Length: 530
Image 1 (cartoon, rainbow, N blue to C red):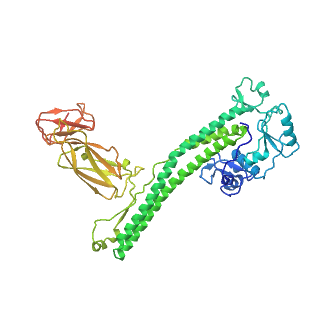
Image 2 (cartoon, rainbow, N blue to C red):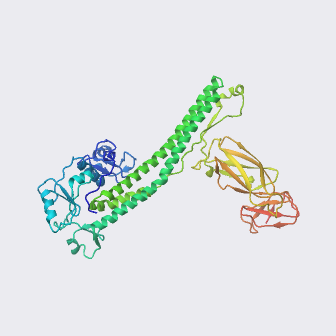
């Protein structure tokens, strides 16, 4: 509430401007000023230098634009209170009586009246029946506890002798007792200023806690980026070591190629490191803004004067919520992958002719969840025969990868027991192979056995591709697969792609869009319309 003594527990370095490193003062131009969007604090003198050019100027810490002139940036009154407490504790600020006009040194502080008192006034205070129960503490005790000076009573502009003790919730204004009786505020909703201020101070603490919670995923992303960058650095070193080891055995021409590849690794590392570093710094700046905002809200709630709290409350909360509602890219913008491949495995003599193109640094930027697998082999396969499909790699932005070297893996698991209608053994995968085209595409071959539905998983860099796992229908030689482009309703065209024996029968499509049909006779070149 109105208690003057807000303990100054901030660290010493927080009392200095981060630009000029000079300590804040309570007089211009060394006063602490608060930027409205990011809540970073600088002295007005430094802000004036930053804002010499046309508006908006950028915050020196987080580069957020500020469209307020340096001269109009509001004081950080919470920090100003802390600075004043520090000056009082160090003896640099003289405290005078706030109850008389003698400008005498203050010796006591009345917590109930929120006033500093000289020796004469404090004696009267202690003897007066009206103030006898008030709590008086010595100024020396205030200094020991590093407490700020009280702001003193605030009086109404309309009723000069009346203290501002109430808050009109209807008008959102500080008022005195007499204001409640006049037409402007008659029948309005009032409350004690101290109660309303306590309420709003708690709301500021709640907002600070919410902002602290909002920084957690950012901090986790920063930690993940730092780890990815560390692993990228390790990969950089290990890859360069492999290059050196391999090329050390070759002739001068091979060594020249090795140096070129090392430079390429360095270039990829720098680019990726720059991306990770930029993402990390961006998130750190956001965390800094949020932390600064949370600290400001917490400090304001802790040491703020009620009047100043109420004047600044809506602006602070608006800024805090603006920070909390910002969206951030938390997924890694690049990866640690940085590998080296040797082409062909040929001897040094055979390699000499192609040394200019020997070796390749693999970026490995494909995002498995964005990659695509396509082809008939992802829908139907014949047991014991080679089935194929193609994997196209894309990065996290959805752009096609134009180089190979990614880890493409194919694995399968039977989807339950064999299909009784189809018959045969439980479906399984017996062989797979992946061929890298070196252009971001991969040709996949596999052989399945048994009959029924087989779950085929396709992974790139350890992550499942889009729509994986795929349900592949393994058919024995007595089945015929009919594929339809739309649901079978008696009117859709059915494409005949195989032969089979048995009785003629049709079934509605499976969820995968397949129709099984057994028929007594059919010709391979005779399409059937259903």
